[in-house]
Image (tube, rainbow, N blue to C red; front, side, top):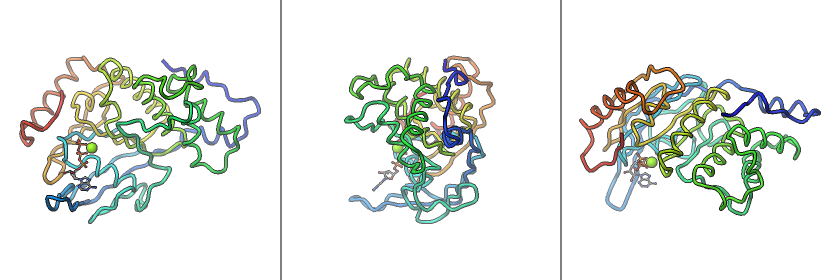
Length: 283
Ligand SMILES: Nc1ncnc2c1ncn2[C@@H]1O[C@H](COP(=O)(O)OP(=O)(O)OP(=O)(O)O)[C@@H](O)[C@H]1O
Ligand SMILES: [Mg+2]
């Protein structure tokens, strides 16, 4: 367990460091009738069709759906990495037109820089914050390393880390610029079940401690129920929101509880009604 309170910053820490580490207000997101198509070698692909979704400040929303139903496309549009053909995305009432440090993305592959050590990778994320001194950056990077439980590995090389540790570094790197929204695209999909379960607990704790709005994409229904305040089901071809479930379970949630399994089973049943049998989904 991470004891956030135990983190002591340098006695003479500049106010900019304490300002940077403040828990800031999370964003609310308004996705309004977003459509997106791609031209491919086989024709036009309707990735998203009039998708509307409101995400409250500090809410943890999980998006579940079969492969190809537009989950990553929606996340890229929220991040400002892709533009919708139609519709709008607003964060705190302002249209999202480009990527920004307020909304950072974490992908399935941790995409760390192998030529930098653990600390160097987190410091890299702080390049988005031009007003900090090198010492400020170091203090902030160390804070986030402790938050994800990797203080002992700050000088480790990336190739020396396990998959779970790499994702912890990627999480610390995404958190370090103190974004208001964290967009997570199947970040734990490549990890073994035990590591994933540990990360579910850690992510819930960090989400509470840092008060972020999180949109989390997954194929795994139980993962979605374990993490989300709300689970949004997408149906494919074209990608649309099919149904939404509010997950009214106390936290931290036990992945193996009967109550969680009941939610997962209900959601899985609903997913099966509009998903082809060969499309991959896990419970
Ligand atoms: N840049 C692109 N060019 C052409 N087609 C694309 C592009 N990006 C996505 N698509 C298509 O849009 C559809 C939605 O893709 P997307 O990656 O959003 O799905 P997904 O739900 O994230 O799938 P997965 O669960 O497999 O990651 C797919 O049919 C995909 O082939
Ligand atoms: Mg995807």
